[in-house]
Image 1 (cartoon, helix red, strand yellow):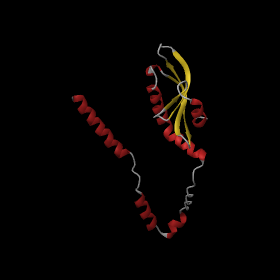
Image 2 (cartoon, one colour):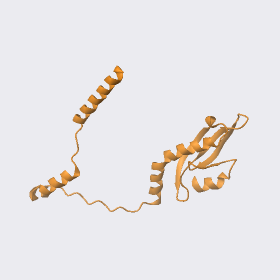
Image 3 (cartoon, helix red, strand yellow):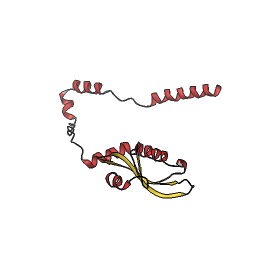
Image 4 (cartoon, one colour):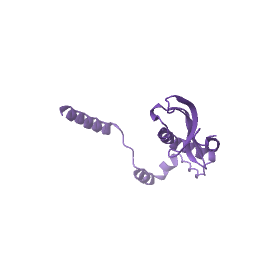
Length: 153
């Protein structure tokens, strides 16, 4: 109990010291009011900031990269979990070449290869899979060729 009390006191002290050391940023409203209050001479001395460009629609490549970046790791983890759920011995599964891919038709999916054990306890070799994290298309059990061509290439 003493240790927990000491730990709490140390944490509070570190937080307080950190709040005093780190400089606080000035709120945007305060910056705007000081800019209005400046004299015209001061305003003339300050360089003008360029106007930001209007946002343009993202290209297909940019959209793909953004989706893969934001949803890729999450999809891979969910896909591996879903694939393990379909196997006889989920703990023995070995994954290789797993990657996230985005298509307009399927959204973000995980594509890769899995080596799993069969009923006799032997590994079957690496088989392709395509998964959205909810459903799994597994080579040898399903027709993976069409899904692989549509979602992974």
